[in-house]
Length: 188
Image (cartoon, rainbow, N blue to C red; front, side, top):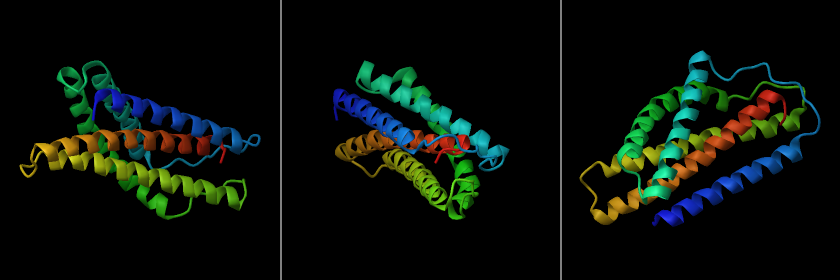
């Protein structure tokens, strides 16, 4: 994996995600809906979700800057990347425990009709579990890389999987945040 290929893939993925969310927003916004009064999880879960969003932004910034400017993540960008990852995993665990019950049971019914609530519930489930899956893959690749079981080729493969699953995590978090914001604003 070259740095140029990774950066161009990352930019393409982010542009496609932004375009898809914009199309979805325009297509599903049919006037004002009543905003949601419910809040997902308790105060600890909401604070942990803010920490998750912040740490994913730091991880994305350090990875993309490191790959674009230096060809790989090193020195201060690597240190910031590792610190943000250490903050992300406990916060994501709190969010997973706080919201897992909510993704198993239906969401509160808004005055938008049963079809809209079912669509929102499907979005919520899909985006929530994709964030967790991407985080497990991203963290798991680095944990496996720390064990003395892989040769150089295996470590290179783990690094490549880590880079692309991290990109998948970024896209999943963007989609999940979009789903939360549109639900909070009352749009399906």
